[in-house]
Image 1 (tube, rainbow, N blue to C red):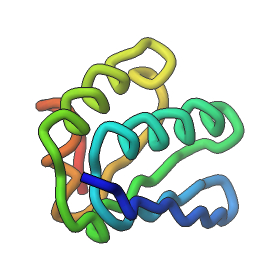
Image 2: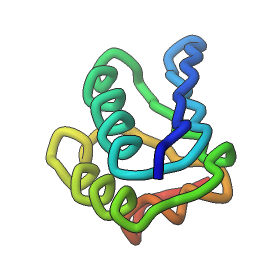
Image 3: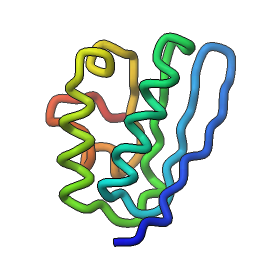
Length: 96
């Protein structure tokens, strides 16, 4: 899939919001992982809004779940929201 994946960033007080849009494939998984790694520690909470995802490829999901299990990301306060949150995160991850 040629992705049209984008991330829109918005900060408020002590939180960063990442609004995802487009298809979620291998490239999108890596882009999101890098965005999270760059911002961990600079914000108290990072919200990842997933309602704008139009398609989720299994390889993108696998890569992201593996990356999210890395110690740096696993201990961060990352909160997933939206209908697609449960589709891309590992089982047991909190999705609002």
